[in-house]
Length: 463
Image 1 (spheres, rainbow, N blue to C red):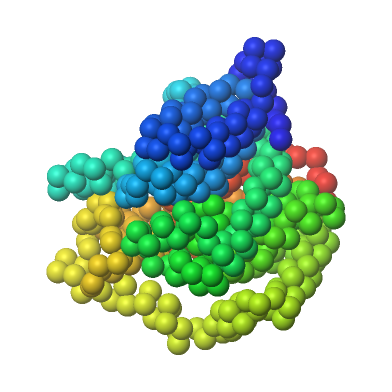
Image 2 (tube, helix red, strand yellow):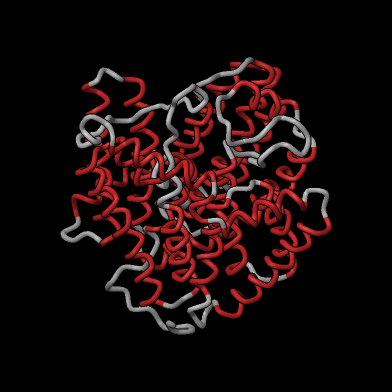
């Protein structure tokens, strides 16, 4: 994994940042259980240092390190929790968020710009709405909630802004660098995810028994909804779907297909249909362009083949087949009905959520607690109807700009950014796209679309 230099000479920073990331992750996994709780602040400081180091080597290496840390930090959190005791706040997950704050010093470039790209306009609009949500939490005296909520929302926005300020050609290199990172991440998370489903390790069983998250299944063999090394089935499946798109189109070949195959099976074992639909939408989008059409056909045939083999030839085929069959149930599906009931509940509130309630932490394990699913419900609860609609409009505008840029540019990297944006559009009513690790994934790619004034040398044309 590598990328173009952006700040200091490689001679001054000779060690690739992803090598240091591997040492931090491996060292924490091996030594962390011995250190116990002391490993948590060490890991967080290590992530912050990696962010500073990686950004000074190159934006591409920094993005690779970020993706690696986001994918593996929750696993390390569970390993440490098993030896040091359950830590409910998940403080170790702050580490990757500090990593993406390292480029914050480059945001002063915004003051030097007379015009802003459409993606930056959308990012700043969502940042303004997030500020409003933070203020609501502060006015209610929810200081901790305001701090954690704003960090999860603002950190991805700040990082996306720093990436959006890079030149257009460097943004293409960033998409390629992300594909290289996922070529390492997918086999790791895929193989571990399959193992986790068959026989969940002790740290996973312990975490599942302590957390109030009910979407991860049961801590028994063949009872887990695979979340692999990440913090839940939604995060894992969303990362896997994005990684499979990038690797499938930007790293063609049998070796890449072999490395990515376990992630396909683990994605099915997550039973997270939203990511399945997102991946399907991205593949369908890629069919529209000559630069990606043949690879899209191959990927669809390969996915169908692997899915059929998983349903017919594995001991967990019945679970996958049953979950796939629910895609055609529509409003009759229990999950769909629960999501529709969320809107009814919100509308029946005394003020119908007109002003908003700020960032909330909902314990879905408590009786009567309403889950918060999708961007519409999230913005409605956090910011109210008026500001929430503004936030949603900015989000859809950013997605639309990425899709439009793919149609205008036509090159594989731009098409993949558009495909990820198209998948995000499918996910928006069903998942939170803007906070935490999923927020980093969404914003980091949606801003990598080429600028409207960029005139590329055409390599395959538009649809």
